[in-house]
Length: 441
Image 1 (cartoon, helix red, strand yellow):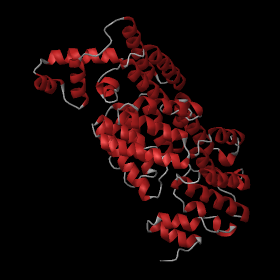
Image 2 (cartoon, rainbow, N blue to C red):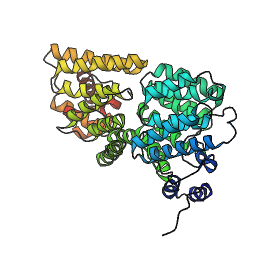
Image 3 (cartoon, rainbow, N blue to C red):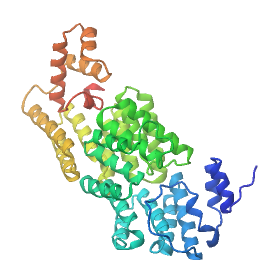
Image 4 (cartoon, helix red, strand yellow):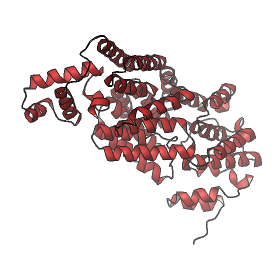
């Protein structure tokens, strides 16, 4: 077996040849403060926006960067979260206040570990530091986004993009815009910066592909969204990044696959993320995976998976996807005639949507609430067998004309049945049918 050098130059040659696993193993070996000054150049991690010149290399800065690099390697691999956090803490304690690179990398690892309060506290302390003035707003914006405060995250990220042009800030802003219900504007932002097609050669390519995939999912453009998300996964795999907390792509890809009626792929992606999130001990990663799995595998355990997902999110500060989880569980409960429980969940979903500033989702939840109240107070809330059959065909991707031909109905009758389904389930149209549970499973 070939011997792997543990010095920086040896790691550099491994990185350049694409041998990331061996390179990571090399970096986890012993590095001294002098050689460690270059360690952060060799780990796979998003680069911060341009900042003021770093301090002159020193033994302490070298040790700090070594610790930060070890933390990044562990976070990318998704193994030993406690050790990754410990190395990030060590790095920050050594030189985080004087070295922006050490600060950036150690805070990113803490973000991946869902230590959002800690990142926010450290950023507030260093907010006025000239050396940290470009990285602090970007980190704070990510904390806001992960916490569900999408409106404020949008404002901060817009400012960072305008001031720095950072492609990472662009990717994070696109994700926020998609979550806020503006996927077309999100894609337009990418294209305005020349980020089209495969985006080969773009800095932070995996983040950009995953962000465009999130926008496609939000817009109901499932096929191109799935392709973007799978491409992002391939890029990350080639770089040795296996932790879904670094870039969340599997759960979204699973939702796209479910919408495209590819349940085997959807289940595989959701289970892959769940296993990785379990290894990393990420409640948010597990929650989003469980949500995607409940959609992909609609069986008697769907309700249990969704309930567990909501509990995991509620217990932490990372709130991404909470509105959608509550909404989907409410649809399932409504179809099972559990109207009071459905109303309670929709109330939680409305609070989450309003807290995030998400008008699109607030409107959707309001329509669903009206449908649940109507179903509770009338006898006409259950789907008929003809409505179920029509909805299943529509969910499979058939047009109204194709459904009419297959069922020997008129197009107007098909439209009537689908309108009844939308009203009774409290959903807004075909995109929501892709995720409808209960009677459509």
